[in-house]
Image (cartoon, rainbow, N blue to C red; front, top):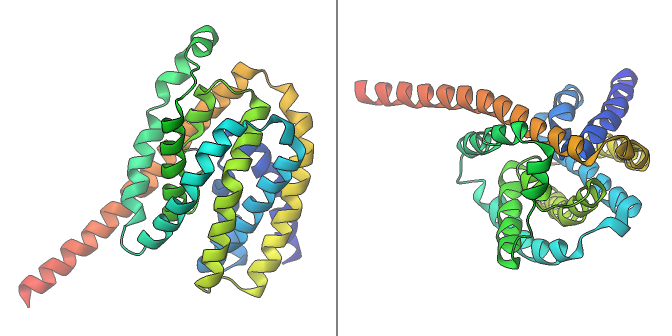
Length: 265
């Protein structure tokens, strides 16, 4: 158990370093480790404690870089939609939604081959209505899938923000979503004492990661930072497409088998 906790602590620091640089993806690293320590049903609780703490600590470290225009239009529309998403999770199969998200992420492949000059020219300021719509869908997908992750990374990269502004603004936008999800998990009883201790261990590691990442970000140019972000989205999309496709096939076969049994009866 102690060895697993040490592995979790080190993995968390690495995961949230990569998350800051790539714009998300920490859960892809941490979930397999958490599955070794906890029942699957309480893994989201522990992970959300960590992501909430990570957002809070990043806000503390990078608060002067927060883009308040995005925050003030993003958050008010994301909060009600995360509640809606959490409610609809009982009625919507997240596997099919993940498949659609995977196709969206893979659609970033052309961005990998754009020159830095063209990428700079493609930066644009979105109107306030678009910021509100993006906030709504970010909250909705977060409520259903449990994470926003890399899905809206392209929005931040296209907005023309610096890498510090992206890290700070993402944290400010998502901190309330994580808090609401924590409340929902607790109200549904999806937690345990062990999950709480594991979550607090993750929290400590995310604080270390947030403090140290301020010294790592200057090592990356703005162009390299964006390229890494797009690469992470494409890789995540391919991985999600593979897993969701096989899960859909598995589910459909089960449904077809039940239909055949029903027909025979």
